[in-house]
Each structure stands twice: as structure tokens, then as C-alpha cells.
Length: 309
Image 1 (cartoon, rainbow, N blue to C red):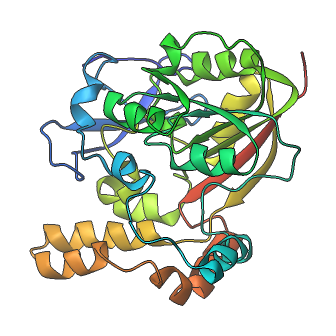
Image 2: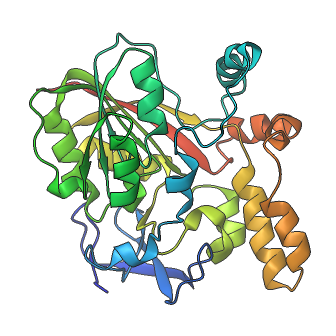
Image 3: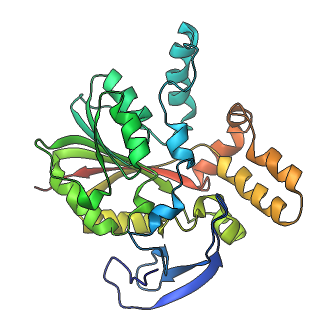
């Protein structure tokens, strides 16, 4: 474990908000969530070191399994292939929302098992990735894509700069997000786009559920951003925020409710909330859309630009 101050260089003046545990894999440890009184950035502190954090990423970690290409043997029908992209544009559930731009070179940080890289390659992008898990990275390499196994901090400089850099639910995992964003800035072409998704701690869910908030995800999530604090972080590294989209889904609200129910002894009811089928997104869409208007869905996607050289 290590004790780290605010990465934005604020004087040490943290407010302890609460403590929590690993609710996803039930691994041991109790972790404090603190708020910097200077800039408002919320973080996990003390936290596992970069050398020890791998313990909290077992091989069955959800993002590794959920991003494998070819998990299902049946080929989707022509109608499904046409309707799925259309539904994504209309309902905007997904974190992986991008602005329209010419095809070019893309880097995915935290590429997991390669599903998004595979999708973008199919659309004409030249793709590379960085992935912490050796098993997940190998699954991506088996598809024919170049992936650096390890942390962003250890990745070598690219031969060519990137037009697009994406990180879906990854920035909150970095031990040094300032160094990471600075490195990505150096790797981006002038005018390049950075697209990130991350939980949003400026929601009623964070206030109500606290340590039971599903997207708190202790101790894997080292930082817990709000639109304001992620904006400060990006701008300190030269990135100019272009747009923040509040994802139209309340899946994490259902999962947080499940954690509360399980703690109170209603294990069977909690399992129902955790295993809701995907079509629940469509049924609850009016609620999610309303929550998104007020920035209360708990998840956001940020687009930023490299405007200076």
C-alpha cells in the first residue's frame, strides 16, 4: 500500500469521505476514499502500489471476458448487424461514442481482449493497443493486432503519432493520470481526439450509495472523477475538453441497489438486480434519458482535443 497526495499538486488537505471494500471479487482489504479540499478531486488513498494492484485483476475480471471476440459461435443476422449500430446512435447507451472523423491511426489504452480494436479495424482504422493483462493482450494479438503488454507508463513511444486515442473506463485505474495524459498528448497529432469514459462521482448515486456505489469499484478505481475534476486534469495536461456526454444507462444504479440488498440479507433479490438482461436498457430508457439531462446516470464519455503543439 502507498499514500499519495493529489496528482494536481495541491497542498495536502484531504477530507476522508468513507471506507469501502472490494465488492466485485470480495478480495481482502479496506480502502479509504478521500477528497482533495484544494481542487475537489476524489481518490482512493492509501492504495495498492503499481506492483501489487495486479492482485485485484484476476483472469476472470469482467472487462477481460466481456471483450473477447468470437465468444458466440453463431453469426449475427443481417438485420441485427444493421439495427445494432442504428440503436447505438439513437439510444446512446454505450461508453464507446465517437465524433465523426476521417479514418487514421488509433490507440486504445486498456484494450482488454480486443473487441473495440477489432470493430475499429473493420471500419478502416489502423489500430494498436496497450493492455495490463497478459492473457487479455494475448487474446487481442491472436486476432492479428499489435498490443503492448503492461502499463501505459512502460509502453514505448510509437513510430507514428495517433489521430485518435481512446480509453474506455481506464483513466480511473491509472496510478499517475497526469503522467499518462501527458504521454498521450505527446503521442497525438495536432488536432487529434482523445475519447475517454469514466464513472461520474457528481451524482446522487455516489452520495446515496457511498461505499456500495457499483462504479466506486474499490480498489481498482484509484480516482473518482466529476465533470469538473476531469476537466481540470485534462486541461493541466494540454487537452481541451470538447464535449461531455452523460451515458443513457442506469445499469450501475441497479447494481448498486443489488449491493445494498445483498448486505441486508436479500441475496436472491440482489442477484436478480445484478443479472438483469440487456433489453432492460430499452425498458428503462425513458428514466435513463431523463437522468442524463441532469448528468445523473453515473457514467460519462469525454471528448477532448490536442489544440497546441
